[in-house]
Image 1 (cartoon, rainbow, N blue to C red):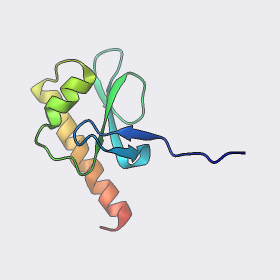
Image 2 (tube, one colour):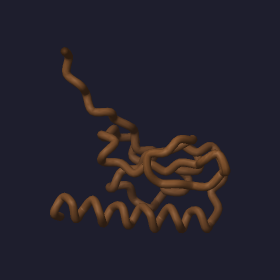
Image 3 (cartoon, rainbow, N blue to C red):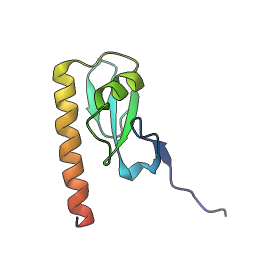
Length: 92
């Protein structure tokens, strides 16, 4: 059989491609709530190297809709926690 390639997605901020394990997914569910993790719904992927500049605009554009200030804060907290967790796993 052929070799399997890792699934890659593009970070909405830096536009580079990464394996999904290296990205954080943010999506909007059917009720309109923002969620992190691999769930259904319209979503975007961001890498750990993404800087805060442009973060919310990139997510707004990718989700094709507004992101409230409260949602932006939740996204920022989730992103920081995710970066910390991935850094610890890598031993950084």
